[in-house]
Length: 531
Image 1 (tube, rainbow, N blue to C red):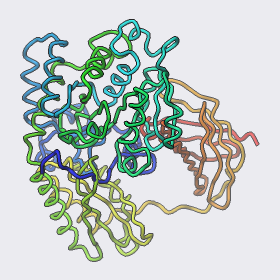
Image 2 (cartoon, helix red, strand yellow; image 1 turned 30 degrees about the vertical axis):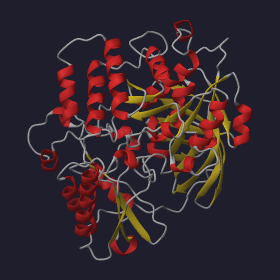
Image 3 (spheres, rainbow, N blue to C red; image 1 turned 180 degrees about the vertical axis):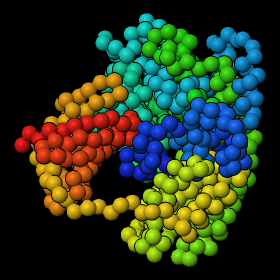
Image 4 (cartoon, rainbow, N blue to C red; image 1 turned 180 degrees about the horizontal axis):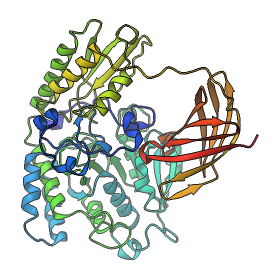
């Protein structure tokens, strides 16, 4: 497969589930998570002296979910590890290193210039600073206070609002949302620093696709920045060819570079300015430091990208899924399907395993949770079948190592043939949770007494609203016996994402229990009924 001729394929993993990629099932409980250490045999056996992660009480895992950051992305290529080791053995001047790497990245990717950042999010921030301050130190040292600046706004089409845009607003820019060509034209002005697009199929299918946005923005002399974090690297770059000025990538996903690295490509003047606005230079972005080791590791990943046999990799992934499908299909009532997605982001086939939950006596979520808590620890996805009678799980081979597919197949077959105990079914409600509740939430290092729940109860079902410190969102829940569960969700279409699940025991006019805040881990809470 020639990387310059890759067709667009459907995005997987990023925003696919409610709450986006950050909603990862059993991970929400605040458990420590680490990447697999590459020693598949040792992981499968679970024997011997504890070393590495296990020596400090952290359990490695087999990653059948994908390049989620919370699962520590991907495993670095051997060539990347070697480049990091060699870079760690000598000193260099970092500006000189950035210049040399920038030129080489430009050659490799057929772009004007390149830069290594401390992740894709940092690349977005540095790019935004470049569009605001242009490498001017007098402006740079004031960021993110844009008082008196000419460029104070970033335009984001509605289709591209997401949690990662925080990297742009962190430079001080005000986000202006647009949905049509007319709104985009009206929003552009001397105050506009850039237009940001998050690469995904729905962008290509909208009236504000990248080519259209670039044509309109360039007429107003405004640059366009594309976030292609989880995409494969296309050469020549598809986004730059469509008119974008800058495009940012994650280094620790499909490129298999350092998890703490990213890459910014595009217009040389803007990329060079982005470097001025990054560490080791002081000011706003000093904290986004890239060491010589990550820089050379990221360059090695780019070098390897143009050498890797992508067709062979894809064929291997598909063969692993076929082997798992063949193994699990021996269980009566189990069917499988392999989906070959369309798109550039997280480009990987996916296997879905389906069965009748009532017939086999187990649901997909139970399988997922049991594998996560088992030995070896295995992460797969709870799929979502359109047939309510079906239950299912899905597996992506993107981040599997040789031998992992066999281990997954062995464990899934065991659980389908001999299911673990099903979760206890809900009990009839014995309490009434309706009313207005004043909450006290105890976080890791602070408290809030401003949250409030307004709930109505109909049988075991709860509906209402959850008002937080600044954001209000709908709430739904259930009552089982005296146990109350309430979930509120604020989606990333607002540019943020908040996912709260309150669980507690109701006693009179008081509820107390635990709070899961998804990616923000956990807290405790108490509630007092006001009315």
